[in-house]
Amino acid sequence: MAHCSLSSLGFVVGGADTVVKGLLEALGEAGTLVVMTGWKHDAYDFERWPAAVQEAYRRDPPAFDPEVSEAQGDYGRIPERVRTWPGARSSTHPECRFTAIGALAKWVCADHPWNHPYGAGSPLAKLVEGGGSVLMLGAPLETITLLHHAEELARVADKKMVHYSCPVRTHAGVQWVEIEDIDTSVGAFPYRQYEHAAGDRDAFEVIAKEALAAGIGVTGQVGESTSHLFAARELVEFAVRWMEERFG
Image 1 (cartoon, rainbow, N blue to C red):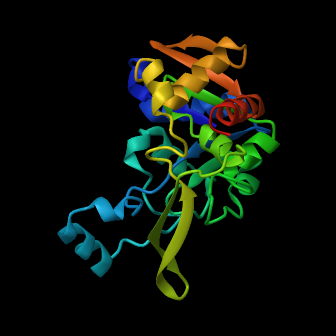
Image 2: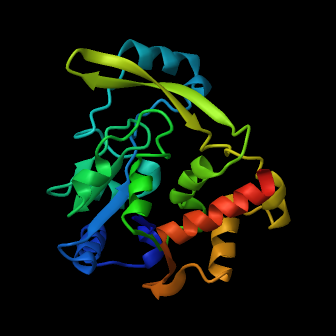
């Protein structure tokens, strides 16, 4: 799984095309590239929108179609490039859609659960099951999506949950699908005290840096950026222990 800040790499001849080609070449025919693509027009925080925008969205919703709906722009330029790459497969979740290219792409993206989409049966769970890795290619450590899977696995009571709905295009027309998920915006746990102790860094960055200090993951220079590579299973196990020790 790759997270990439293209701008942090410095000038890249060919831009996003070059990065995706490079990743696919490094993985080889037996490998699989996974990114989180999401959806640019999801309704995750719908209730916070201005009333007029909510009304317009409900009146004529841009229904999610996993094969054609544009990736979430906040995730950078690489996810949309992967989504439109020949042979790419996408999962069907309207808010946390994943896209994959390669040998296990179909398996990774199949049967993505509507509720708790970062938990059991999710593309992140399969990344761990398949012995995958997470590459932070110049991307900030706070953006490691895999740690949401650790939040799902952590045996902690009273996780902060959210409920929202998204319009999805089906054979029967547009339907609003209700979804239950951990809070991936504010956080599933009360991280603030640990962020404050670490100088107001995001909790995921704190966890990732502590994992690196414990010998989980490697760091190197790619272009002008500092990049990191983590074994998915080891990182998840470390993060689950971290969360359970503090919030369990």
